[in-house]
Image 1 (cartoon, one colour):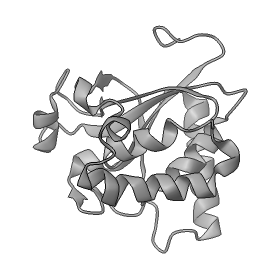
Image 2 (cartoon, rainbow, N blue to C red; image 1 turned 90 degrees about the vertical axis):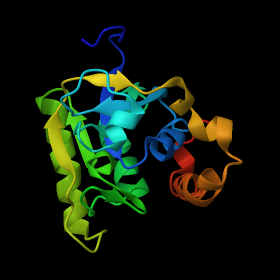
Image 3 (cartoon, rainbow, N blue to C red; image 1 turned 135 degrees about the horizontal axis):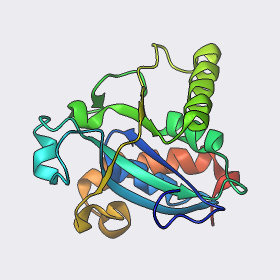
Image 4 (cartoon, helix red, strand yellow; image 1 turned 135 degrees about the vertical axis):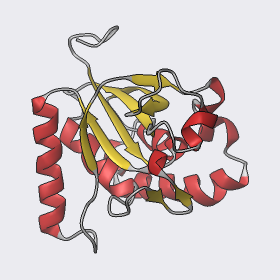
Length: 184
């Protein structure tokens, strides 16, 4: 069991481009207890944002989501994930380019991997995206919390141009599409 995690909680780590965007969406979901921005999948222990931005550490910008499976399932978490980012562009989300922006699911056990594979198969069969899904499935090894100023970035900086032009439209789309799953 993950350190600090209770028996009625689960954790998944997802990379879908800029962690500011992803965190802002998951903060609003019923059953999501915590969302933390950070780095995963690289070789350098406890990297800084500046190091990750160079693309040389192989970390992805990720969110680590702690949730209550009795309220929201991993499948539902992943359905949101595949709606709020483009899983067909390798190492890119919009203008953000580099391995740190790759689409990736860091699974913690064979069950999480199987759920992720099932969701990818369903989305592929439904032809929701016009290109093949390139989302990487990788075993979870470590999560490094991003610097404090990255946490709840959209909530604290919603007035900034990046937030208004990039994050706010994603959050609006998410809220419209998943209105029945919102906390408020």
